Image (cartoon, rainbow, N blue to C red; front, top):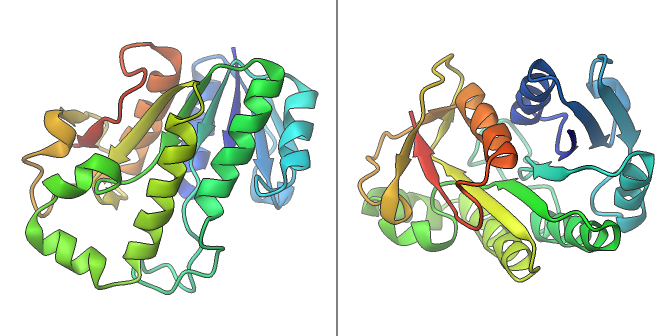
Length: 219
C-alpha cells in the first residue's frame, strides 16, 4: 500500500513515515526541503509545497497513493505553541483543499488529517481554562485554520478521519485512549505522545473503524 504524506518533514510526520515503513508499506512525501528527510528504502521524496496544487499533482504523478495523511501544523516564529504564526492564515485549509482537489482527479478516496483537541466540535468540550487560554493567545489562529481545513475535508465527499490529540508531548508512551462525545472529560493536563499519535494516524488510514469521524485522543 502506498501513502502520500503531507507535512512529512515535521516531528510527527517523520514518525508517521517511520511507522508506515516498519509496517511494510511505501511512502511518498511532499516536502519543501528534500534534505529534511533521510533517504530510506520505500520512501520517495518530492520537492514542493501543498500550497501549490501543481506540486501536489506531481506527487500523485510519481505513484498514485492509496490514501493520504496530512500532518501539517502552523509555522511559528519560535518553537513555542504561543508564538506568533508566520505561515499564511489559511495554510492548512488551502493545503487540504489542494490535496482534496487532486485526490478527486486521481480517484483517491481517503484522507487522514492531524488536527488538535479543540478543533471543530471538540472546542465546546475543552476545559474552560483551556478555551480562555487559546482564545486569548496566538493559538486561536491555528484553531481558526483547523476549522477551515475541516470544512474543506468534510465537504469534499471523500472518506476522512480528523484526528484530534490533546497537547502533544515527547514521550515514548504508545497506548491511546479515545474519548467519546468530542472529547468530553479530557482534563486540563491531558496529553498524547507524538509516537502514539503517529501510530494512530497510520492505523486510521489502514482501518475503516474511524472513517468519517473526528476522534479525540490522549494517552
